[in-house]
Amino acid sequence: MLMNAPKEFIDLVYSTENQQNYIGMGNPNARIFIIGREPAHDLNTDIGRDAFHQDQELNRSNWKNLFENKQIEGRCNPRRPFPNQKCLRADGNNDGTATTWVWYQKLVDLILGREYDRPYSLRPLDFHDFCFHTDISAAAAKNLELPTKKLRRHRLKKEVANCSRIHSSGNSLL
Image 1 (cartoon, rainbow, N blue to C red):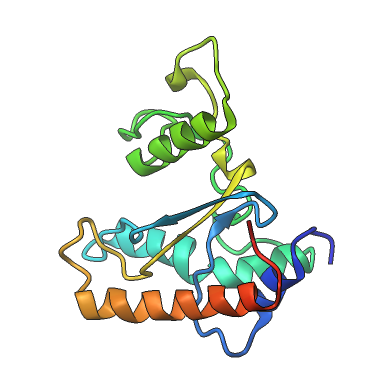
Image 2 (image 1 turned 45 degrees about the vertical axis):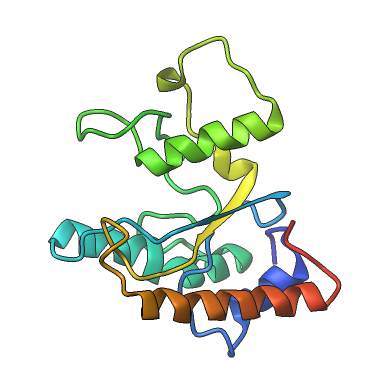
């Protein structure tokens, strides 16, 4: 395996017990761990369904591809997704990103004490180098009301069980 990652992370990706396709994105060696709410994809549109497939459904197999030095499926490398994006909200006519990722970038910069002498809109989005992020729920939604509480609770229980298993081994992703 060419990519350096904690054994527990690699075990999670390859685990036959883990039935989740979405693990997360970013640096599995990072000391910053961000847990989001759910992916913001509109599954009522072709673009939204394709984005969900690329970002969520291919996530686990693309981690395996990285570990095995194979070609990434689709457009999203989970270690460094969308490396050419700028730190501004996408409007269809620029190289921007989702508002949530702009906030993640600002949060990571604040935690790390990073300051820049140019506007955020001119700098690249690089928070994935310094953190790992995942979502409580893999159920796509454009707002909090769409995934049911039952579905979010079910996903949260699975995530807590996975985290507990990693923590009980004496190791941590943080």
